[in-house]
Length: 177
Length: 259
Image (tube, rainbow over all chains, first blue to last red; front, side):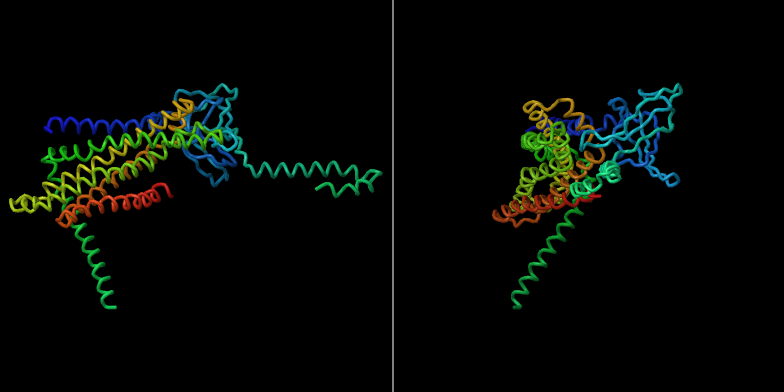
């Protein structure tokens, strides 16, 4: 095997290896979207962010416009502070835009959904969203649901108990859990 | 009783002696690496036999591993209606684990065993002693270029393995099973992080290249200079490399992703 062929083959090998690495970086991983570090940051405070994570998507009408950049906890207001990075091309959301944390699908990841308001002044870099809606936590929802069911039952029952047929309704009581 | 104890002690001392010689050998090799900058031709010639000749098995295995993962992953994911996540599954498992590990195992079997046999045979036919007689340092002339070639080839081979594997998963997932093309790539890009996943995979493959190269060359250099000794050394190379790669992979994974 002469030296020239060997060198060409090794050169080709190194080139293919680097190309593979480049493909992994650009096509497989998020480097291409991470690369454009441009964009502006806005913050929003939430009572509860649920399972929101850094790099979770930020969407408007379902279109992804940015990502969650940082999640902090403010010890003065006792609220979570979420910093979002919005891409430069989506500039000019109104100042009274509201932010909610939703879940994609039943078991999917959580994301921040923005909903533009009607204000004429727009959010600047470092601006803060005032209107926020926290993530829904399953246990809280179930708890509230049970509580309101119990309250409904009670409300149904009370007129019966004070009515003339109190004895009859007492007989039905064991059916109600 | 004393005979048993003596045998145990003999085995333990022999083990530590080998370990110590192995470390001295590594230090000697590392010390002679800077000299390689003056003679890159030696390294290039070794990269041919260590790297280029391994590409075929790497590409073929990568393609089939990716395709099998595409098929198996689809069958599980479709139950949850999450078949769009197939790209994430294939890419993450390849980039984080299978790429570096399987490439290192194949590398040990294809290139490591060849290195051991070559060096062992050089020793058995007294070529290494002949070099010393001519005041040529065999570590500098024979070992160092091979070590550097293994060290440089391994990350490239692992990257090729992962890239081809992702392509294989794409072929099966999108081409055969009808997963949506855009969702396949966009979900993958969403979930695979360049620094956390891709770079950690590259770091793993660099570590594996270092270790496999060290084991293969040392086993050859330390082989009993007979036909039987060389064959045993070759076997040891493959077995030890595989064990060390799998063990180190657990440690590295625990360090990188465990926290």
